Amino acid sequence: MSLVRNPRFAAALGAGALATVAIALAPATASASPLDLAAPLLNSTCSFAQVDAALHDKAPALASLLDQNPTQKAELEAKFNQSPAQRQAEFDAYLRDNPDAAANAANDPRAGGIAATIQTVADTCHNY
Image 1 (cartoon, one colour):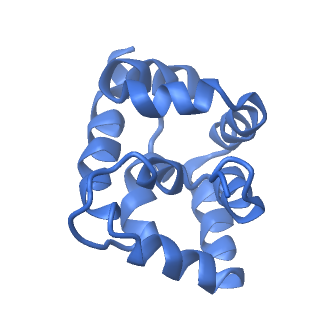
Image 2 (cartoon, rainbow, N blue to C red; image 1 turned 90 degrees about the vertical axis):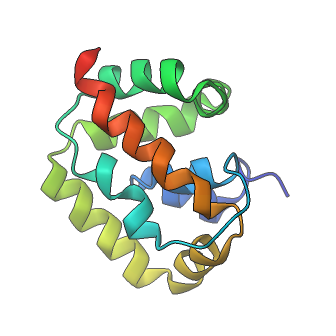
């Protein structure tokens, strides 16, 4: 099943779990916590426009995936209209209510490379 059509995936994306999206694009190495993967962007003060521009520059494959899924992209944009504290609280609640989704993301062998990508986007988004 396509990750984009997977309801669990869409809910995670809607909950602000950009890292979950990016896991599909990450090279296989090690596992990481979904919270660790998402934290740099969950806590970012960048606008969605800044994050989107940074994604297009630093992670074009991920940007393309989001561009091809306007509903999920709009949900993600709505999350960036919330404060970092609101995004974090919603993501925490999602992980608490969906332990299988959290475990699946954490155990995905492709998760290892995504932390650096997410961190790079978070570190550079203020430049856009």
